[in-house]
Length: 412
Image (cartoon, rainbow, N blue to C red):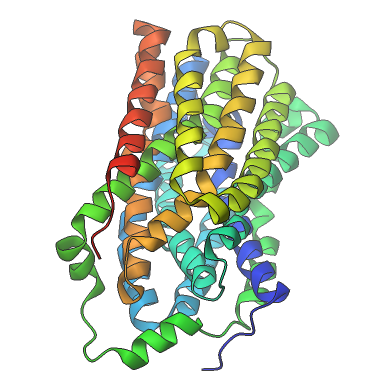
């Protein structure tokens, strides 16, 4: 297999494919109110939201399986092979959600179908992020800096999802978008997947992976290596990824959707807040890439987590004022970006090359499944007992995630 030439095309191909897959992932919660009305109708809008968040979380539970499956494929057969499969499956799952009949037509079958498709999305995304991170990490010299190109796919995917929904609302109107227009955004995934595959099908394998394969005297099972030899690195990575992901969903999912359900903001304002979050997240990702390259990963991660804790403890004010809610979304956006680029490099540096795809994917996806994806649902469930406690739950996750990064140093 030919080795890839490191240049703008390779970087753009990795980043573009990741952006397109994150669009698929985020569209479900960006359009949460419409998805809830179609498949989980209720007289209480908060109940609809809670059911959407729960279904969103269920999709995450396929991610660790995807991390193991595609992590294994990436470590045994190459990063490129894994990335082709993950993009295809995620796009298929997203597009099919756009054609599932509503609950009023299919009843419980509609709910089951949507859950299955969310599981398919989760399976694919479980291997996508780690494979993309490792593909670029192993092809460049300035590894921490170049992580910003992979990590920018998250806010750009979120920005694209929110932008499409905002455009549909503006063109079709709220009523038509709620009734059927939101499905267009899901069907657009077909076009998006084709574009991503055109980039990735021309990729070769990474330099570092090929050299490690040639040098290895014995190829071990990467799953056993990660869970038995590098379990401490895995645990630290899980809490880092989980805490950062929980705050991510706090800023762009929980706050704007709950504020909309409480009548603080309109649907259009909600999408605008999500776009603001994504733009500031992108800025933080770019800035922290340069900081991490110069000062290391721990410094920007620490700064971002301190900002996380502040935003979490201001939840009462955020759900009482549209202006404060917008400010908190902005704060968490920039803070997440500051953490997210060095997070990728930190995780990649924890594991050896031939176990890296499995290790990075497993840490990231288990953390996001167990901790991050459930955060919106848990916080929504806590709200009736006091908004402060919902914020305190998030702050505790941030403290644990930061403590692991500061205290742990891998012994390899």
